[in-house]
Image (cartoon, rainbow, N blue to C red; front, side, top):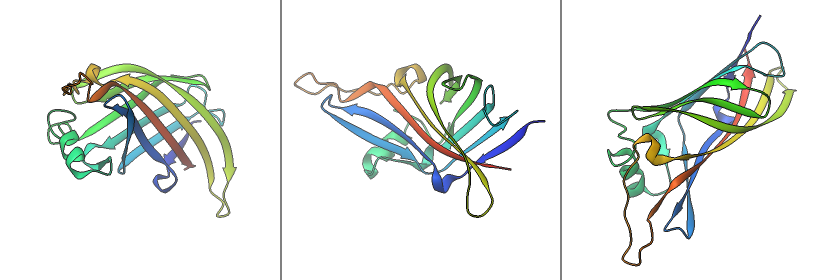
Length: 170
């Protein structure tokens, strides 16, 4: 019998990091997201993880940049309101799954730290995970690019993904 787990958004965060001008890193996050796990046991091996984030909830702490990210230069939030991830396999350390951004689906691999299971003071059973990975944004048609007069690329193609997720056993 499989057990369902639901993300606890107040104890979870989804972030990305991308080099800006190749000298600094900009961090962004999604404030509206959903995730579920269906697991056969509490090792979570070969559990099914699903995740989605609302593109309109993107924040890099700069309104102009956020507006640009929501535009067709990047995510096109109007036409493609969500990004999604569906796991294919999880061995306790690596998770392979399909990431869909815009209208492109690509298989990616995430490194996953399973931080264990605890019972909170209210009797809820919780599980924690940290997942990281790197994608090439251009693989997902996030193609906008610019080069400064000095020849520096404004936005790196490589994007680091960081998900810190706490799930509640249902």
